[in-house]
Image (cartoon, rainbow, N blue to C red; front, side, top):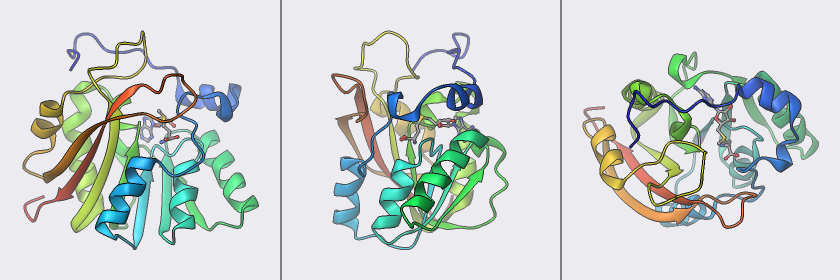
Length: 206
Ligand SMILES: C[S@@+](CC[C@H](N)C(=O)[O-])C[C@H]1O[C@@H](n2cnc3c(N)ncnc32)[C@H](O)[C@@H]1O
């Protein structure tokens, strides 16, 4: 993990979504993330799902098509506005909400949460706050599916990178780490950047 004293200067998310086409963004990927798809097939989960940092909303839409009741949040009002329009065009009912996961105003409890690329953009000193927030939004025994860049990815720039032991250490106490696999971050970059896909289950203690 990079050190707290070396913060990454991310673009302002709202300006980004106002000024650029979502289809050109590195994370834009219309189908359901293949790692999440395999995990859902294995676990047979259904119910209420939350997509944190939904951005273009592609993953929220894919989850809705699978029959989940989906809430999708993002810091950027423009991102959720555009994603809501896209979903409506496709006849999908998704609750798109402008919300900062570090100061969440959500009160519902979810059966599963998907975070594909939000966590790895958060300031390192706020990671424990993120873990508490996400744990608080899950029903007991609920699942967090997390995709983040791996320390094996050497491209210049981009988000924070993680080793498997970083994830284990950050989430322990509130989550049981069921699996953590080396994978890629599907999107518009070639080759796809190296990533980790983590399946975490909220503990009774969380
Ligand atoms: C790498 S993009 C991934 C977008 C989407 N999950 C996907 O897979 O297409 C990260 C997203 O996280 C959002 N984000 C960053 N910080 C956030 C926060 N504190 N709360 C909610 N969303 C946040 C950004 O606006 C951006 O849309």
